[in-house]
Image (cartoon, rainbow, N blue to C red; front, top):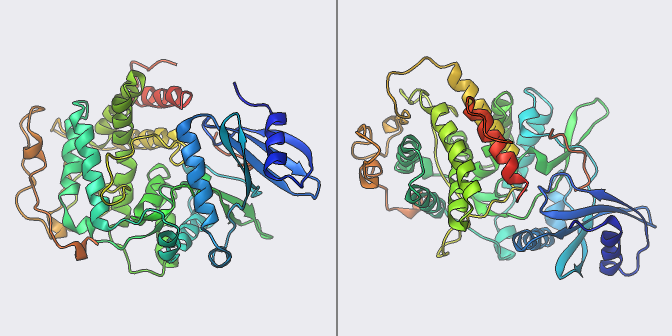
Length: 444
């Protein structure tokens, strides 16, 4: 049973003994049911947010959020052109850790609603670039995860291995992702400070005097680490109209060396979320989650099946992929929990819908399998990766044998307005997948 606003207000006075709460209102948006939340008004005029997790995983995530926020020193906050919540205190509520933090006013926009052109798209691109330009010592000194490019690649391989081991991964996607994992050039990138998969709903906006949106705050810090910068741009797969403006602004605002395959890695980050969902459901024995994940994967497989392969070195976000994920060196099994606050399931649904629409506009292809991505033009590939498997029973060794990996590690080196706006349909796999995600979200 959800905790009442009055109970949450009492937790504020426990966390901040010398303050007086003069008003409280419920806050439930943007949490996917993982927290009981409220906005409390204090006697001194401040408004704060209090959150209490509903389960162990949410509590672990809330503690990570608190740790990351406290690692942002005054100096770090001073170089960012937008705000981050301040942790004001904590308390115990029914055995759970309650967190009280400052409220960042503003409005939010979902990825599918980010328009093209100057404004929200360009503000997001610049804001993400500012985070990625932070010195890695911010993360390292706080004891947060620091990954190399090689470790990012290894994490993606482990995820794909586990997804394939379920026996439920469509062969076309296995071949598509394995081809990308075998391409050394995709993994030659500079790691940066990352948010671990932020999306537009992680940011709050306010309009300036001319009515132009600007980012005024960033809410989501719990997955702060050093890793692949593409992870924070995977949401652009669900914002086809704004994608080019976001990426162009990001590239101009960044003070790092150009990353030629950033968009391709961002694309695969989005696709691999479906595999991660499948692994999560299989590992926890949740049959409904597995069924939902399979529906999503099958829809994605159909959507990308007729996409043309990359040729003549023309690399676009629709024609190529790369892979990564976050796991510290020497860590055990990958974290397969579904961080729905980090990557909202509605974003996954929008991504599938976009891919389905894109596939409908593509000329019918003669083959039955998902078209592989031709990576030979990128260089750095050895061996034949273009062989066409003869059936679903082909071994993983046959599928993933193309392209020897380079061994040189040096070359692989909540009070804001929310704008996010049954059974599977037998005739519309895209709608079935979206409905599946909404049902599962209700149990998260």
